[in-house]
Amino acid sequence: MQLKMKFEDFKLIKANFFLNEKYNPSEDEGEICPDIYMDNDLNEKEHELLVSFGLRQLTGNHAYYYEIVGAGLFFIDQLPEERIIKQLSTINCPAILFPYIRETIADLTRRAGFEPLHLDPINFIEYAKLKDDKPKDKKKESPKKTKTPPKKKATRKKKATRKKKATRKKKATRKKKLKAK
Image 1 (cartoon, one colour):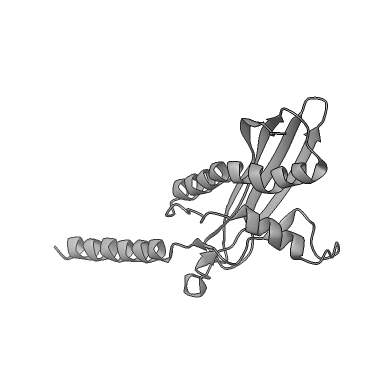
Image 2 (cartoon, rainbow, N blue to C red):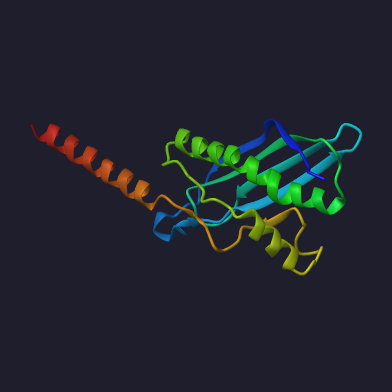
């Protein structure tokens, strides 16, 4: 049996961006390792799989925090067994949705005046293995929220901070020269 799945639509569900008022550039952590969370809802009558996928960085000493959630609607011609649905909703569908989320984060950071944050690709197969290998302790962590694999982390914009400082110094120097004339 060959499974046919069709990606129908993407919707941005949530987009939050916050400046960190307590940000200390000298203690910048330099890399962003966002939390990943996923959810899915299967409508068996309509053969629809709705997958929500999001990334968020709400902790650490960074210039900003963000939370982005998107949802994709997928149609499946024949409903497979539950194991396949789980694989689709934790590996295949998030891999399709990730570029939309990644682009949204890059656009938000750019519009906020920062260098665009381009998150590194996520290996969803490895992520699913890490998620399955973790001991299930419901008190500590919900199954929808897990850290990205430590293998790849997004790069930060220390360069942007340095550029802004250099630009401020240049402007201050120009003003002093103009006043001196």
